Length: 278
Image (cartoon, rainbow, N blue to C red; front, side, top):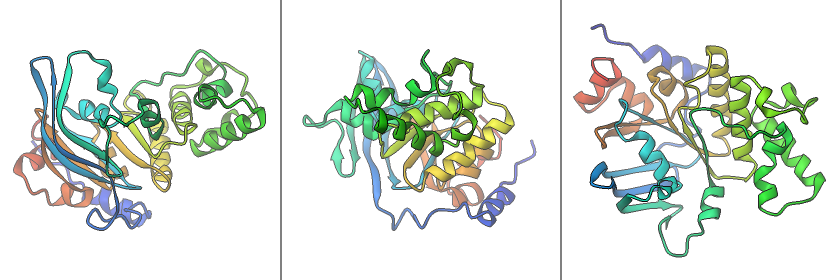
């Protein structure tokens, strides 16, 4: 099987100024630090002693074949797995040095700090405006002026404002797939998160919409830390600063995307990235 050459993608990203924003993993402050994380669904172990760090204001891509633990790990970062009764874990996940499983942690505040956008866009059956301001409303904000400011700011940040500014009262369900996904990103931004988790956000989109989402990811990392699950190797190479390769619930290798895609340290990583399996 012919191997894929990612050098041109890495070079093009650098030429376009899309390299790390001065966030060398060895220098940048750490947003997440994961220490010996293992997780079980009942008797089935899904993650095995994961140790890694996610630098602040960077994009971390999680790659690996289906069922390898990527999405499970992503959901650990804002404790979404807590909704599953049979789940248990060992190890620690530190957010800005604080254990997110500590007794003093407020779950609502955690999920405000660590927002999530799912694989399939899931706009609420409400207007575009009401979708964006849903979180602030739930938090108790009632000022129409402030809510409108939040709506405009978040839609602009999600590169959607110009497309919908004249129909904020229309149903969000009428948006195209790409627009709906950007609306979900705007909705996540409305709670002022520090981290955005993206679970294959472009897997159901056409190439043009996918390109817009990738452009948006690059812009957002200036203000947010982003962790993205993707099956698209080229996408990971284009948008991420760092990449983590998972296989059968284990973290095989993690490092800068440039290094992982051009000089992987583990043969298994090279085989997966070049398409020999997976």
